[in-house]
Image (cartoon, rainbow over all chains, first blue to last red; front, side):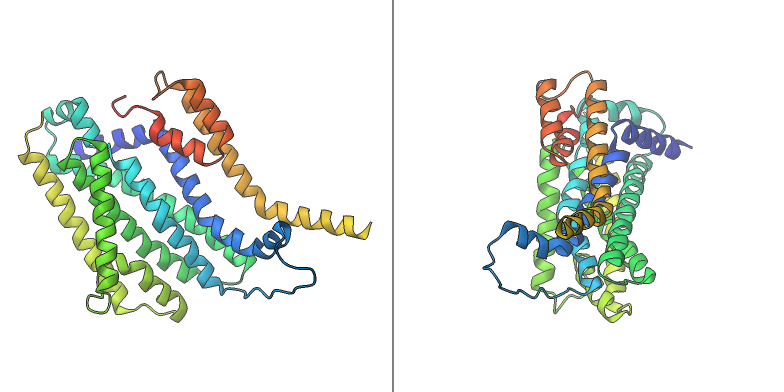
Length: 257
Length: 73
């Protein structure tokens, strides 16, 4: 199985690069920072002073689901950046250094080269997202109150789809440019544009994949899966398939040199 | 005396909550240092990276993992 060979090679490389250690850890840190700082906010304010003697300041206790969503939005900012940073050189770097030529000279189809790389990173990202949300979920339950296991799993699943879409965009950009910096720039620009457009047209287009996290917030509060969330998830899957297909296509029809 | 006890108790209770945070940061730092020792070439001098990893917690190791090594290596 040539697909498995590329997949295993990619996993081994990520392991040797310590990606399997640091990416989950950083995701966990990102996810638990917000619940912790929110919990300690009264103490932090007290310690740093600024409140006059005898002043009482009632801190409104945020609902548990809101704190859980804070972790998600933290991952949405820096987690997305990290995904793009770790994947920006995966194909472009190999094309630049000639490794891609060495690999593709062997009987390996372009699409299996692309999808095997994509799958290896997707596995890393799904596991990192899972551990991060699990840690956040644990802290929220410990410090604020109950968020149901069902909500946690739903958030993980739909949010993982959005992260996978980011990965797919990055893989696609990898086949367009050989410079890692440009891959980073194009991917981030596209993600920001997608976010902007879908928040501007949120009332018209409800199925944009970048609305997944805002749909998730509503789902956490109401407790039921909306059709808009399923729609966004469907669009995300569609985009992922399209991006991977076009990545294989551009890689094939562009001269590798 | 009572206040001291209260403060100690507060610290101990909070330690259980904060400890995982500290442990993760330490693991990150150690992983980055091991990786730094193993790689032959880095972007820029090695000892600078060692300082960055040790001094800036969390951000230092991340910066090293992302920018420290060469892409074509």
